[in-house]
Image 1 (cartoon, each protein chain N blue to C red):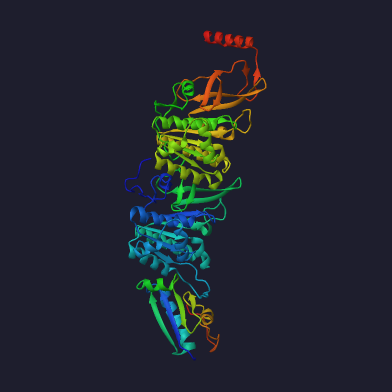
Image 2 (image 1 turned 180 degrees about the vertical axis):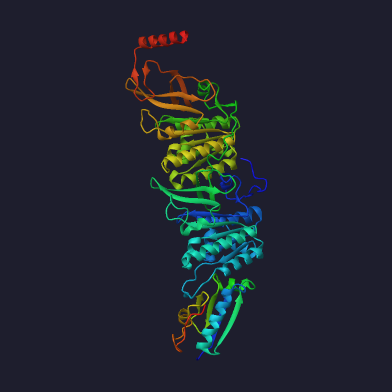
Length: 510
Length: 101
């Protein structure tokens, strides 16, 4: 589409809210008012306050906060927990309140026609006084309850919006919604700020709360479509997780890195690709944590930095296991090459985990990252939230050009697919399956490389053993079929030869 | 009248609504209070900090500061009964109380 030359493109003002400007393609329309609508508890006030806080912190732009609902003292106190020192900003002339909150205990009588001229005068005065570039009004519903005549309030708010536009102030106006999917806002406020609308949601999904943000429209300028998850973090405020907005521009390299096990490297055609994500799937006890340990040790032995997120086992347990396989995690940590982070999945929501993990990755700058296991995280989320988490984490890891290894636990001992696997297998570059194989009344372990994007690999299902030096991959299972499906059936050697013969013949013909 | 009334009327500029409010108020006061009142008219466009101090939103707003209790009356004061009620004055002392627009 071509731009009308007489109508210059609408500029964007970066809000500074983490992740939001990515989905907003740069920010909110500059010099305009944007309606931020949401149900009770959808973090409207946080958005409104953060818009000003980031303006002050990142862009040295003073801001005015017009509060219709909570008194300024409440807002100062509530926002302190998010790390914003509003009183200091006020004393520096960078933040100003216009207190339009209802006064408790004061009797107000109405005796004739009125307008909200004083509100407008106070807003204009505050904007001029501190040279504000940003303004937030929170929230519109409260002013409609203070004044019975909605038509007057609507008309007056329209005057406020026009005045702000004239003064070149970029503004946020928050409004109430009664349901998550319905009218944009109550009291018909969208009529006069219909140009730019953002919706905040706090949806109950599978008994779990999930916050999302959606840009409904920006008149005359572009934005990402759809709902994006976000979270509120102490010390940071709102953090939006841009999923599909993240450009998937990671380069796949041809550089191979060792899996930490020479035999497995051989099966994978020379090791894992450096910036690839590998999924190791298997039932409990099949050797996933061992593989993770070897992957970490393999990196450290080559002088690479390795970061391990463990969600299933305690630190002590993990270190003891590693020692049992001849790997000294403690020494590696002392050398500064390894960092092991143990968390209970239940300590935080998935969004919070994601942000904390990203932060650690950025701080530690590892060459390899392992997550053991993803399935543990799946417990604390919905399927959709989990998938978004994996997409986001995968894409983040790939951007850093580091190798990732995730593990997934299958529910049944004998095989089958895990939920994790079902939902993320398409996102990973390689998949390795670990299985129990029952042979003649004995439990053995089998391993196969199911998928290896961009490379040849060994397609056998090989038996492996575990001892005090780690994993040893042996010969392929012969005389048995149906391992992956969890129903191993033994075949007489003659049959195998005959089958091989059959396929060889076929291959030769085609 | 034992105590003197102190009234503050907040308005926005010299508009017809402002004029109307001032006229309505003066009439009610003269009829009911005689000279026992002090009236201050504050234009919020000229003195926005006073509006800020008193947290005025709507104009015209009449604040009865004395005698207590402090009370706010919003509007152009065309509803005489409401104004009398807000000023804690007896309704119909002189038989007048019509609306003047």
